[in-house]
Image 1: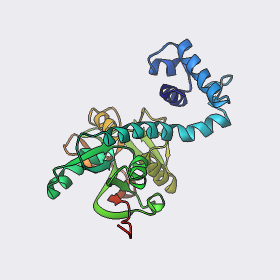
Image 2 (image 1 turned 120 degrees about the vertical axis):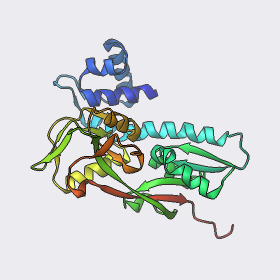
Image 3 (image 1 turned 45 degrees about the vertical axis):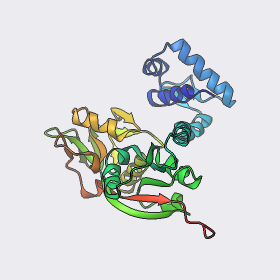
Image 4 (image 1 turned 120 degrees about the horizontal axis):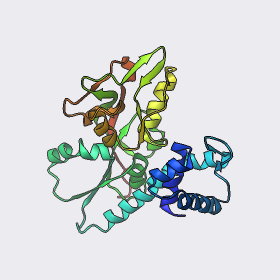
Length: 273
């Protein structure tokens, strides 16, 4: 298994076209097709029905898609964990945080506590939680939407609140709700992401569907915000990221605001410690 095979697979899932997927992956179609064949050989199953247009996923492909994003995140999280363990700081406090919180909430929190010896590792929500449970992290700073099942067994402290809001460039009209259809130039989070799952659940709960295919997909809120500010589309953005006045909330109902808590998670103290 090679990491690039997972990215190749996800590109084809998004484009459903071998030529466009190869272009997105900056390679030739023949080289791209060979890599897909090697992935299928390694897994022992066909992932795509190549006879249909657009290309569709087989049941095996659907199963692998449900795991592919998590596999990629776990690989990168493992690399970050190794780097943190090999830190040149002795007895440093190891803090894991999601990218958004590391770039916004973490610094003021650290300044209030006047910490001088710590290491910061950026990881996915699942990577942060796993790091605490395995003892790789002393603390984890994560968003929580009330789905506390994956936090079972950890000591949790609420240290802040935020919300996801549907945002667009100031002065633009890139997204609107019309008869339970969300229309416009919409950008979404990649499947398997924590934000993406919460947004999908909210839209489904209110019977809202996207009228048109999204114009962009990304796992990064920061990347989506940059495109929102450039006027390329509308996307759900953590309010904590919107520091300037380039991006504003779209004119949508209040239930589109998805509120969440910012938690500090740590492993429970041992009774014999």
